[in-house]
Length: 148
Ligand code: DAT
Ligand code: MG
Image 1 (cartoon, rainbow, N blue to C red):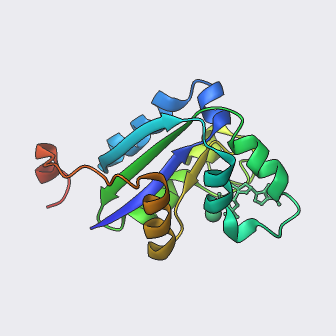
Image 2 (image 1 turned 30 degrees about the horizontal axis):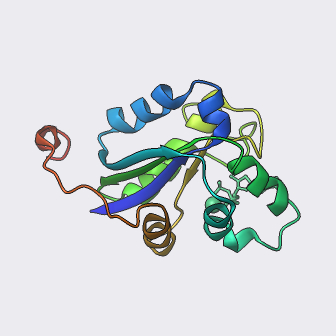
């Protein structure tokens, strides 16, 4: 079992896509173990995107991600990190495959609606950053019909 950090960015919230996006993760069979909404502080946004701090797009990215509410989520499942990245699709919506969130709903590189952790180490770091209080431990009864 893995847990991954997924976040609907301000463009997804502004475009009324919260339900659409959350529904895709639910229908896939992932289990929700954390969810909240907030307007991120600049400190949180900078820490989250620290790997990109030298990139030219970094200031714009921080301004964007702190511009309004984001929906922070933790999703759990077998290979959840890879599964979530596949559901999300390639970074640029114009290149993302149809069937993916970015491929179906987006047209841009920066405004790509959603973040998903890309590896176990980044998932652990990001979950600790956005959910310092921890995630939910619960039994989802439907899971018995998701994995044989
Ligand atoms: P991803 O979100 O697919 O993991 P990433 O980690 O490479 O992509 O970049 C983080 C975010 O930064 C990405 O979702 C959008 C933005 N970004 C990346 N490359 C960019 C670029 N060349 N121009 C503008 N924004 C960019
Ligand atoms: Mg990334």
